[in-house]
Amino acid sequence: MTTTRPAWAFTLPAALLLMAPFDILASLAMDIYLPVVPAMPGVLNTTPAVIQLSLSLYMVMLGVGQVIFGPISDRLGRRPVLLAGGAVFVVASLGAAGAPTAAVFVAFRLLQAVGASAALVATFATVRDVYASRPEGVVIYGLFSSILAFVPALGPIAGAVIGGALGWRAIFVALAALAVPALLNAGLRWPETRPIATRLPDEATTRRSVLRVFASPAFWVYTAGFSAGMGTFFVFFSTAPRVLIDKAGWSEIGFSLAFATVAVVMIGTTRFVKSFVTRWGIAGCVARGMALLVCGAALLALGELSGPPSFPGYILPMWVMAVGIVFTVSVTANGALAPFDDIAGSAVAVYFCIQSLIVGIAGTAAATLLNGDTAWPVVCYATTMALLVSAGLAWLRSRAAGTSPGV
Image (cartoon, rainbow, N blue to C red; front, side, top):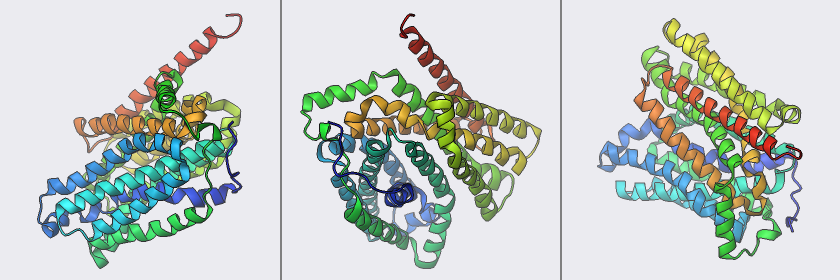
């Protein structure tokens, strides 16, 4: 009942080339036009608040939309959701490029997020369908997270270059142009992977199945683990420009290069993550990831107390935390979603929606309520979340021990 149709016959590099573009484009569309945001109110005859709304709505819909498209992918399949989402993304990007008014621009941005959200759900549900019980799964999750670490650093630079040469509308044309070959490649090569057992679920069974996700203690602990890892990077990304450019006086290029070294460390760590999982297991990797977050936060605090922001005091501690992030985000999906292969689309959607809400609310609170031109937002978020997840792992171990035979 869990056989897929047809078989997934791609090598790991081929699978990454097929799937990664949709993950990257969803993130790239979020921040590639940041450099031209200050000029857009004048061009579209609107206020800065309306242009900011185009950023906020995209982020919200990217998370919330996954709850909508997850169950749809369980009912209709991964392939149609992916192709429809990709097509909507292309049309919406072109619509945003040609928008005559601010209202039309915001509407197309919302539609762009709908397409990106659908493509993300189908992509990660496919990973669950194919790699849930294979060691390549942790490599794919780790590489996706590491590659996306480059996007916030390189996306605005690309947007500045394109916008400066051709105008802000060309940025959205470029997004559509990048999405078209990915969509065509998927249309030709992406097979349906949804398990046969979930092809025709009745509505009541689906509702009960989704409720199973919320009732799982492991789901909440490992989802919090993912939120700890990616939320730490989110807070770092949100505050680092103020720390290094505004406060320390670094150039934009110098900042971008230093920022990129953190992503390089993450990508390098993924090379070894499969062996780490084999040695320590999922819980062991998350536990070590949380320990590295705390260690990196302690080093970051020492750097903050020792003097002005510097590469050794601010970036090097983030290297330590970057390793912990990869240890964590590479395995938390398998830990959270292992019991739910029969509803992988819905479970993946809930997983990413909840972690995006945690990161968005707690991460934004840390970046805004604490001093955003210091290291303290990263220190406090990473430490707090790591301690909570570590406590959750201890609780799961005690529950497992209590239900073991002979106890």
